[in-house]
Image 1 (cartoon, helix red, strand yellow):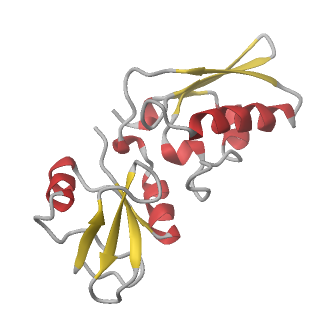
Image 2 (cartoon, one colour):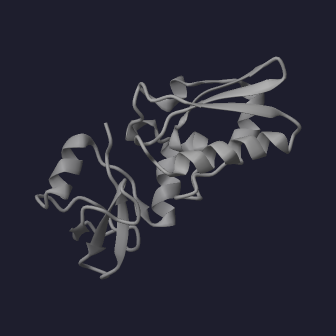
Length: 166
């Protein structure tokens, strides 16, 4: 399921695009695909938000940021966490993946590739600094639980890899 299947009223998109993920600030909530629904009913904005994983600490911040963004244009907001269907890295937009790479975080591979690199069986994660695939896993966990830490054997720079979640 792609995030594009979310129901978002067109006139709310500009405000939603102002709300960033606090852990990866170059990504908006739309890039990340966590907005399942955004509608206006009786002068209030109703937003259904799916966490990237259960217990993600960024969701409270995102909820507050959504309320603040809509308050700036005089709208009240009701944010509801929706756990099903569970979020998947497939919901990250192509533009979001590109922004992530430019920011220095390797975007997620498919499920098979992800398992291979996290088990140390394949060198297919591309370095976000020099583009080499001669990289290796340093730690299963990077700066957040949804990322792993890699190091490039060509330029010797460390970088995060966003793990595939299905």
